[in-house]
Image 1: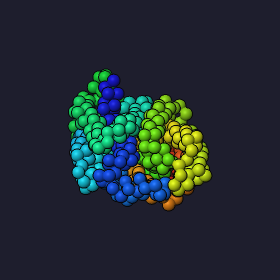
Image 2: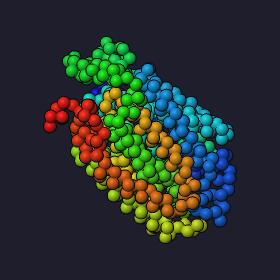
Image 3: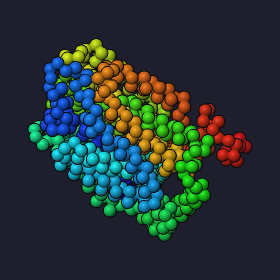
Image 4: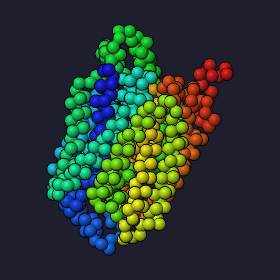
Length: 487
Ligand code: BGC
């Protein structure tokens, strides 16, 4: 029970991240916000002659959304060091503090500079949070519930996005200061994480890693609810000593045998972002307005996609250990590929530069966008976080996970910064661009990604990588265990 409560409190970091993802699109389609900070975009939006595909194309507007992610990349590196030196709990508290400062600056913003600095602070919060939270959950969770508890983080990301969509819908009706409410409500998840993290324990691994072995043992007994924790305690001591002996995790990551998990963990995050999901998450209202839906209908449709996203994540929680990772990834790739192609084809044939598409076609597009979101929510979304957290051996785990987190942030930045410009130049072709990526990632899941379902986290090298038709060539004879050599 203690573990579940601690995990949920920690997963509030996901709520912060998700709220932030969901809030930008709605805010940037609010007139009062545009008028105050981006008057040029406001003019363009309201000019009848403006090209549908280009009316939101503005570098500063995109910078508003994407500045957060650049800050998050830098901060997740600092956070990985901080996690090791000061512990996971302190890192989460810092995340909440940064985020809160960002929220205050944003909600009170009187000029663009304040707005962007606020976004940078939010980014610091996200960077610290996303590095510490999954690590924290994995370390306190008993092995057999690790997958499900890990996906709680994604569940809270999707709930954050949904809450943001609902708040935007309500706040958009308040003409002059609605956007301040939207940006200000982000304080709640940060306060939840900040106050909640005062009540939770530090992970036994982190305590032992920092030499507090007695405290580590005490906490381990407390969270497992039994006195007899010797086996697990010894395993942590063993793993910590092995990791200490192995030395600098970043250096270890340069070894040939680290290439398979490093490549797979990182490319999964690239693929996750190049599904095009965040085009929908950040820009759904903008996208729907591009199709000619009024702003009310647009925000409403964004709420629907947010709801579908949360609900479908449940499939991942219950399906991931039953059907396996690869099955979900491959199935969803087909589903998402079809959705992108249909959406692209409808926009190509129906949406000219200045007209709107008809109601029935808009409805079909929204349905296919929902089918796309569903597929993402039970596959590339949660597994993009889960798989990198389970494929590294202990001596490279934190450093390897840092590469996964920062790749995610960099790719999110690229999509956020480039999408509106790409939409303007590639027009409906942008959907075919993402479809091509989805085809490639489906093939990757089929041919190159090994299945990790049910394999204990510390046996990945022997039971997964060493057995894989392609990746086993990266292991030299001395990295194979004696038992395997005899086979
Ligand atoms: C991704 C986010 C995305 C979200 C959507 C997460 O796993 O990292 O970029 O917006 O899923 O639910």
